[in-house]
Image 1 (cartoon, one colour):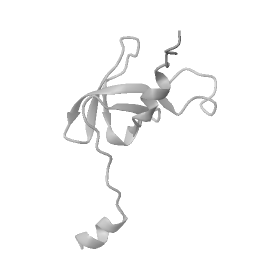
Image 2: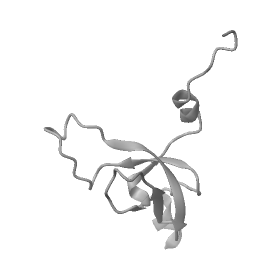
Image 3: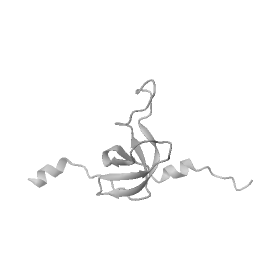
Image 4: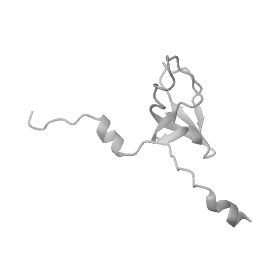
Length: 94
């Protein structure tokens, strides 16, 4: 029976410490005039620690006043190439 039940299940993503992830804004209330026009993901956060492979603690800034532990379903991985897009490239000719 396990074989048939596991056919339709997806493998969960593997996050480790110091990975960058996006936080989905599903259960977080933000004061904006319209949810439809607001962003669906909240910035890049570093994972501080892993709690039983299901929950993760983030390193949040002091401005964000929410509890720093989130379930894996609320996370979306930021691929390594996103770091290259965020860091400005310096022109070696200058």
